[in-house]
Image (cartoon, rainbow, N blue to C red; front, side, top):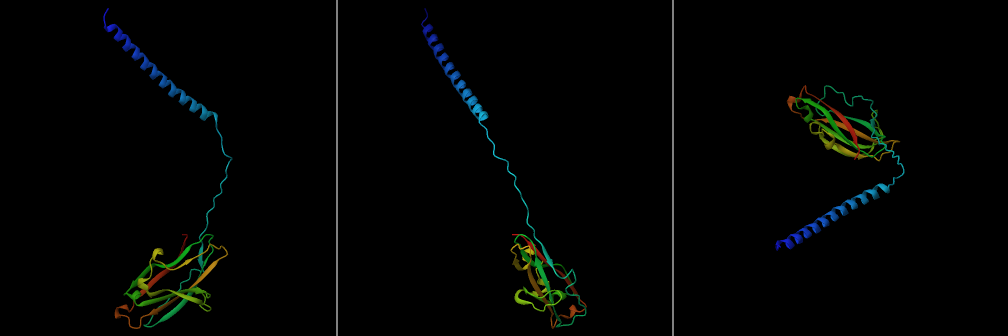
Length: 201
């Protein structure tokens, strides 16, 4: 009888034991997976129905000049001055920051460099008359050429509280033509559109 016989038997026995162990491990993993899935499927619950309601706030801004031109002047002479007021009202439901800036600025013969603006904000007065204007705070003093050209650089930041019954500020705008403008400013022209814009923070 060959001596290799017992060795082969022992090898087969070891192989059989490893195969059995592997089978048991796989069976255990599968069983665990099945139990987890069964537990997950067997225990469920839901919350009560929710009915969320979402509304948005408003930012509303208006002035009292009915779209009329603030200044419509011709034949200005050196040293000429003028003043107008406009009342701006916020009726938005959320707080907002109001700023004043200019758009559509145009000028010939550098006239915008010889026109100085002095702008103040306060209360009282209206576009019809500055009578009663009080509490003036200066927000700009400089040439028309250098006036703010967009909201980011706008002047007179006013933060509203979001009162729909209305919050009002009055702006007084005065202009002065230089006493000794350059000769090339003769027959010149200048224009700008003042814009009050409100943005919620």
